[in-house]
Image (cartoon, rainbow, N blue to C red; front, side):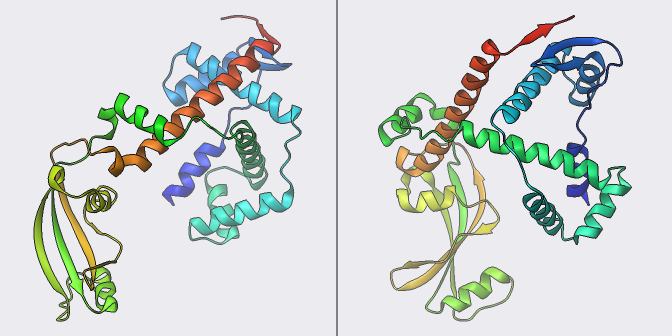
Length: 274
C-alpha cells in the first residue's frame, strides 16, 4: 500500500493555471505563480529553484514534442500491469487504490505516459557511448576521490562449508536449523590484511546476509557477513566496479546538464516577472 501511495503522489503533477499571474513563457508554454508556489510547498525549496525546475520541465516537454516521442496504448497498458504486479495487486485492485487517493485511471495514464516519454528522452540523450570510461581513467578517478570509496576495516563472519551444496542452500534458507553435514567457523576479518578476492565478496555483501555459494578447496562454501566496523579504503581492484559506476553516474549528470544548458541558450524563453 505504501508503494501505491508514493506512486500516486508522484503521479499528480502540477497543472498549468493562470491563478496568481503569469511568470514566464517557455517555448510557448506558460509558467504561473500558482505552479511555482505549489512546487515550493511540495519540495520545500526557494521560489527561484522552483522556477528553474519548471523551466527545465517545459524544455523537456518541448524536446519530447520536437523528437516526436510517443507511447502507444499497448506499452502503456503493459506498464500499468507491471506496476500493479509489483504491488502484488491485480490491475483492477491497483486502479481501485488509486481512486481511493482521488486519482482517476485517465489521470494516472496521462501522467504515466509523460513519465515514459521523459524516460525515452533521457535514453536518447544518454545513448552516445562514453569513451572516457576506461580502466586508466577509472584509476585516476579513484585516486582523486578516494574518500568516496571508504569501506569497513573489520567484519565478523561465519564461514559455512559442506561437501553437499544442497545443505548450504538449506542453511541459507533457515540458518537456525542444525545441519550435521555443515561445518561452521567464526572468523574476525581485518580488511587491510585480506586478499582482494575475498574482500570484494565481503564489501559487496550487506551485513546480516549470506554470500553466494562458491567452491573453496573441494568444499562448497557460503559466508554469513556480520557487523562491519571501522573505516578503510580498499585497493582499486576491490572497488573497481564501484568506481566505474560512480564515474558513469557523474558522466551522465554532466552530459544531461550540458544538453539542457545548450538547449536553454537556443530556446524561446520570455520572463514576465520574477
